[in-house]
Length: 267
Image (cartoon, rainbow, N blue to C red; front, top):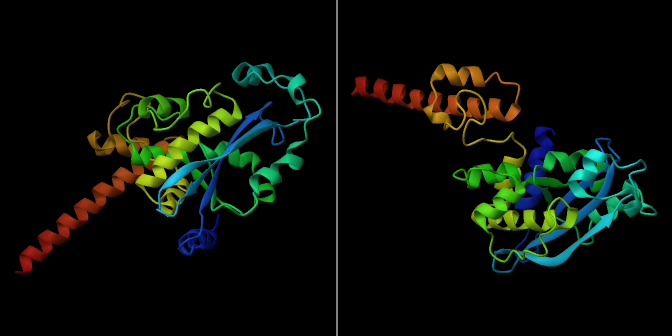
């Protein structure tokens, strides 16, 4: 996404007039494999901002089976338990996606947990040029004290208010997972802002702690400069981003200290 598109996207959310109902559709997909048309189920749950400025879940939720046009792999059936017999006669992805992603009245954003996965399938051709929110990336920023950030671990660590257990089950099916994610999104929006969540979602994940290797579990500010420099070259983009962010923070702190010292010598 270009810088101009970023600015336009942020402007579109910031310029909403007072009284406009802001709606976000949370999406979850189950797939038959890794192909770009392998979706076998889509689920959704809407979140809206009320007149009081508070974000809430609405009654708009649902799921549709999708014909992936190929047999569902055993590996993916073992996760979601959707079988070939479930999707016989269902519409293909290109037929069902626009009616769900391009909702009547529009949305200010689409959202998903680890949204990069859903964005592989929900392309701009199907979803339109709409902003995306990744609840995984945003959870790292807003709740860094938590120990794990998967959709279900957030559910049981946080125990979101109002989450009805039966609607959120079974896990790894499209509508229940979207429903759970929507509770995380609601709380993120009520602690931060829509524009901020979109901005965080366009960056790599800012990990609160090192997640692998000899420094696993350490906060970034506990690492030496040498360790940070090594991790800044890691193959994982989230690790690189997190290490580089800490290096920049230290550099900014050193610059302020040096400026203060220089000013002190002139007085």
